[in-house]
Image (cartoon, rainbow, N blue to C red; front, side):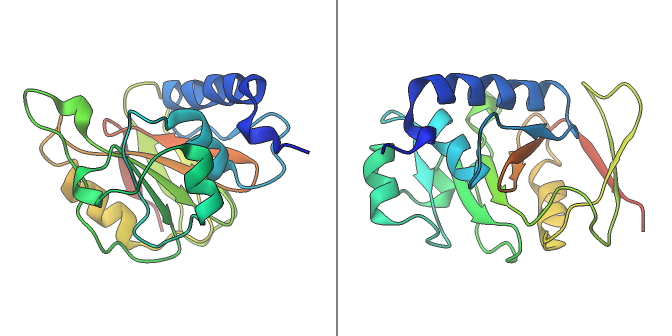
Length: 181
C-alpha cells in the first residue's frame, strides 16, 4: 500500500492546512488523516525537484530522498531545512537578500507536542488578532533565540513550521515571540 502522504489528494489538503497555519500564526492546525510525522508530510507537500532541502541532522532516510526527488544541499543554500527541535541549532540558514527576501529558508522542526510544555511564549504580529500563547514540548531554547537574530534585519530572515505527529503551527518571520515564563 502506498503511503498516504505521497498521494496528490492528501498533499492538496496538507497544503491548505499549511497555508491556513501561515495565515493564522500560532494556531495549531491538524493535518487531515495524518497519523504519522506531520513534518515529513509537510516536506512531501512543499518540496519538489526545483526546490532545495537541507537535513543537517540526517533525519531523512534514502527512501524519503527518493520519494522527494531531490538531493540534499547545505543549510546556508537551502530553501527548506528539516530539523529536530529538541536539538540545539548548529547551522546558519539562508536569510534571503534585500532584493529577494522571499529566498529566506523555511525551517521545518519536529517536536513532541505543540502545547503542554514548561515554557510559554506569547505571539503577536500580522495574522494574530489578539496575542496568542503557546507552550511547545521538546523545543530547545536556542531555536527562538537564534530565530530572533536571524530575523533581526526584517524582511530578511526565516519562517518556521513546528510539527508533531499530526499537527503544524507556523511562525512567519513577521511574528514576534516573547517568552512568558
